[in-house]
Image 1 (cartoon, rainbow, N blue to C red):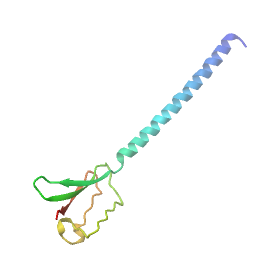
Image 2 (image 1 turned 90 degrees about the horizontal axis):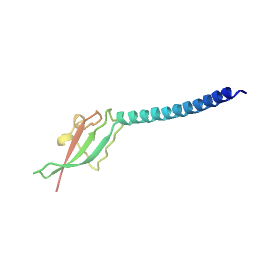
Image 3 (image 1 turned 180 degrees about the horizontal axis):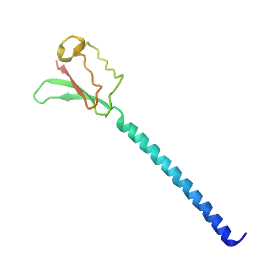
Image 4 (image 1 turned 60 degrees about the horizontal axis):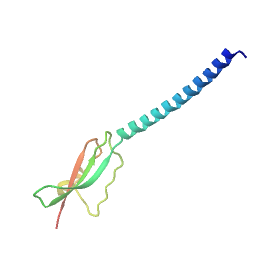
Length: 109
């Protein structure tokens, strides 16, 4: 085998190896971007207490800070609760839409 052919064969092998490594790196980047996009598009439901200055009320703040609607979210309380203390199905609260927030008032006794 002439020396020039051997050098070209070696360089072709190196080129194929490096191209394969670039392909794997690109696949990892695409996988990470898909996971990041999936995480950015999911709902994030945050629940925590909130108070109003000068008031004796404590609110339970339920907020969806995600970009999509939250589905199948359940909140269980040990007592019956309707929004603003008014009975009826229309006063049952929903917080599924994006950027929605709900505050439930509780009395301190």
